[in-house]
Length: 406
Image (cartoon, rainbow, N blue to C red; front, side, top):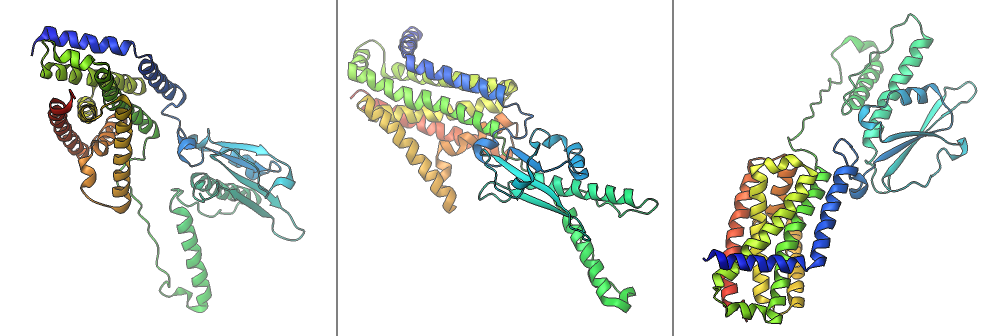
């Protein structure tokens, strides 16, 4: 391996890419998209990304007049919902009717109906996105909890000197079930009549709800992961085969073959330039999203593993394709084929086959690094990705030496 020849080959690759304005423009667009993601989707925004992936990012509380219940709700919106809950007064005729709303929004309509000699009725109309009845669950939990508190406070004002009902432990998960069960116990004991002092007919209920330990998907990290993976794919699986086939069509590759440069040096120059370009662009995108990730060893190992795998795939396509069009179609066909195989394996629970794809391990380890959730299983995915990268690189070198000049 002669350094002066390798240096000349790297300079040639660099000059060709400077002349490729489309590739430079796309790289700048990726960086700009990462900056916009970082600026306009701050991490403390609870609803960031929900408008893109479904769910409700704003809930309107519609009412026809400012009753004590409405005032209580306005004063007791929890901090995590303040940016999403919006109150608005609408005409009484519109309560209970469908109001056009933009995607990602829901509505809770409240009104109080009075009839002479009867108990007032508070009507609650919940309008959720079509086909997503649970989309308003966080807002409904807040509504029922604060509605009970508001009614208890109003009853206490009208009954001075009396002991108000005991307030349940509002845990947002179990209190409605426990309240209903307690009411059921009281009704059962009342129906028993004279034997009310005996052994209780209905046992008490205890609910213990715990998480599995996994975190909710970080959508910002998922988008950043997609950008990083695309940067590596763009450099190694799109640019490398396309530009290599361009050299073959113009005779540049054959001209290099008759120079003092050996096939190993020609191959080494490509193996050095394209991963460096892709990893540099990917690291820039990741740093814009989360600068601390650059100090993570796991992140750099993940970049090298995914970049090496994509480099081997790209060089294999470049060796088999004869023209730029064939190289482009080969990259697209590979991407679609692997995506379909991974999707079929995931839907039909086919084991082990997905483990043979770099695309199965790569997004997992990169997302873990960007979201700061690296666990033992991610190190196993990293080891598998490194193994696949080595296999692809050996296969690419063998195929290129046999077919790369033809």
